[in-house]
Length: 532
Image (cartoon, rainbow, N blue to C red; front, side):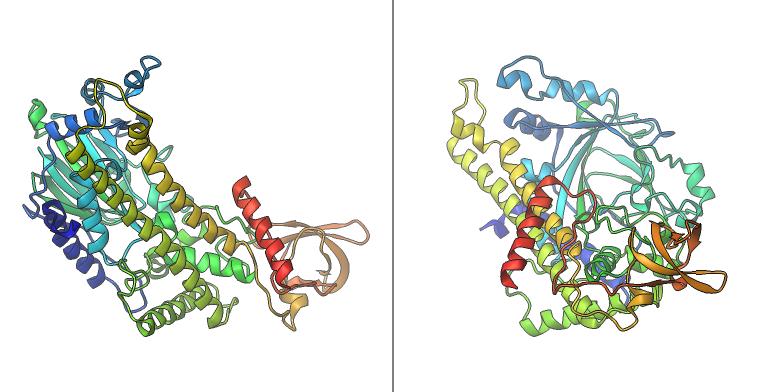
């Protein structure tokens, strides 16, 4: 019934075009090299100041204000204050939005999940039109007064974004990604955020080129790939409320949910108990895999690792693809990531079956997240239709508990809990190393840990020693039987003395797991013991 919605129809074609643009920029191995895209007057989706006022008055919305100092990283602070103990005193009002706009851009995160009459159906259209090319779509709304010399300082995002200007004007400048090797410890998906400075002059010094310099007007559409720096202003806009720049940013989430080649490679290696040359000795599933050695790789390998997983892995509607097509997609992706991993580190050669297992697990996780996104937007639309029939939820006469429970403030978090649970389950799977057999060359190849009893090279001869430290650079510090300590010994100069004891499934918790994740991991351990 929702496909007939005019809002759905207005945006579905836009995202089909964006999807085709992304697919056309993908190579046979899944790597993607896509640029920004600007379309004039392609969408008549409207969301005005009056619509914003109605949304704020009809819901319990949260908003944040972005910093406007272009010499510092992009940061957020909350909009509005709690004025008393009542429901109304805790709720954001339109006056606070207006006042905050004098200091900077006001952002309504996840607006698509909260505003059911217009933004939710538009976001659902985006999810459907992307045909499983992302794990979900999250729509934020940005509001900026006219005359702002910087409405968003230069920064990058972790998701591809599609911008639809629904009111007023906004000036955008979009740059190519800076050379990551010049600042390898910076996350390319989070440049210009937090403590990272990313002013225009540094972008130019880092090899970035200005790709687009455009003023978006009502109905214009802009696609900006993840990692592409961009900055905005509203110096061409007027002073009236009707001149405010309002645009919707549809975040096409892949990296947020680990649906990229870097994560697939990393988690498959952890699952197999193999060392990762890009993060040697580190088994933390929550470590930032986009910073460090990965940014010193060749540009081809770097782009491949940073690319989202290809079209065909996920499906919007169950049964969309035949079982044989799903199998082909899984095997093709498994083969591609296996070759990618060998290109990064030829010394670690996992069997194709390990990569297939990893791809199937990623597909399961991504499918759960994608399905829940659709459910979230359908729920918002259903609530909107109910209000259209029964009347406003928030009235001056007070609210019943039933009405309070229907507020998006309480409805939406349940979906995000489901998203994060699927993401945590994927990490638990990765941190549960499965080893079916011990290789014949285990003394020279088995992963070492602190206190392992070994023989280490000292002046060309092997002597008994104990591993003191597993270093992040892939080397080891050892203590010999006579107390002498040798630092920086390579794995090739060490042999394990005792054959490791391995069960069919060895579950080892990764570092920094939450209490909830640890409890689930313990349950998996007990379940595994019962099955054996």
